[in-house]
Length: 429
Image (cartoon, rainbow, N blue to C red; front, side):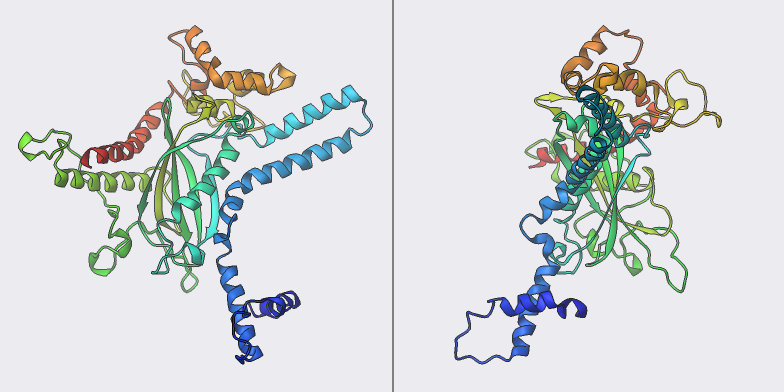
């Protein structure tokens, strides 16, 4: 920090600044005090640089900018490699090279329940509250940036034809505070999906500090102080608890119902229990945190996929971007065999080579327009014309009819509980 303030560029800018021109001419301020005040102003600007106009937009669209820069570099390199080719041959060669580049950024062979995006950041001063902890209003801003990064990594084929991903709901469960200037990692995974909705689970984690050369053991999942008293972060949010009580769906007698048909006290208790039970499942069952890390916050985002006014099913999106379950998890497949190789870019899923590439790869008769038409409704025609006893190829790719289908339904039930709880709050008001 001292080296920063002693740099010639900063000293020159401080001398040329007109920050103290509002003072009367007769007022005498020493040069050292002037320098201190100006340096303090610059320090405040540096510490709050993310709060400056355009700071959030830059972080949000950086994954898009990064891919565009990579595209320009790949295209420039291809142009130099084909500099001696004729016009038609150069055009065909350019198209082939750019198709290979696009496939290189597509998650071919990624497993829907093993895919993970990690977004690293740190708690800045402008993101903190008066307790010098990360404010609960700052979590959605960071989550926006992480979701954009995940979308660019997971659905490049969909985004290139003009697709958008609207956000329908977000739920946060605050477990432990993030102190100011702390470095953290936001890990996004696929929670579950159905015919319309796509659930993304996020976890804010930090790496434990080593003490006396040893790293602390299991990650912390409870926000309590000594004596079992709930910490400040659980004052307005139910803490994670083990063996949460099952929520009863038995209707209440009419005498106990309020104006909207729901007892406000019972509804509040049920909402609290739902929140604790579901957050506990999300924190423990869905890809738990490894040792040496502390879990601070769990989030669940519900979104859908739109191309114009058309809603595209998540299974269609994942299959056309190369996402697939393991070979032994497909329908009508045998049990796991160590000799069977997992899907990867070098060993792509059969649905990728036989179906997906035929939609967008020009070498196989595809085009961006053909892919766009498929997203806009051709998948419905294929589904209607197919055999009623056979699942469409995009559903087979994500494990429908296989051994992983039950796992997807269990995870979907966990995520839907949050949505059901939020929808039930509408009836309370």
